[in-house]
Amino acid sequence: MQIFFAEHRSGKFQDGSGRTELKIIFTDKKGRTYRGNYGTEYTWTPKWEDLQLIFILAYTVERLNRGRCFKSLVEVAEEVYTHYKEFVENPKPGYDRWGFKEAPKQEYSEALL
Image (cartoon, rainbow, N blue to C red; front, side, top):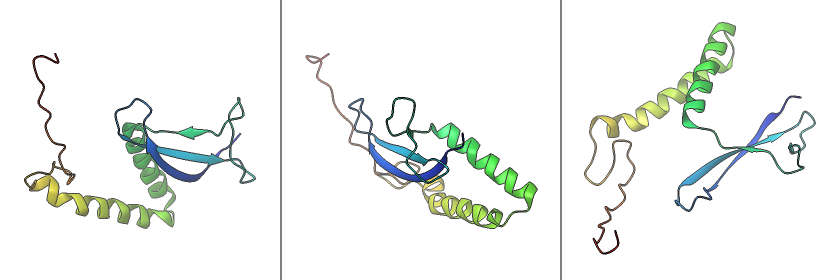
């Protein structure tokens, strides 16, 4: 069975960390929401390493196929690189090297430890 990308959503991880979760939603061949063996909506929360590999594979396949999507794939990569290049090369005070505001450092009391 093939499944197809339908949409993405964001939410919060259920581990209580407050981190944002990326969810990928799939459909079946007829465009209906794909449901797993238990009848629930099938979602995928990819690891960043998986996304990196998928990008490299998409780049390689499009290059080999000389496909129409190759140029847009490269343009997206250039846009992301250009957007973050300044932050990577010249981090600003209060921001990490990717341009995100740093979380305040928490101080712990010895009484709590």
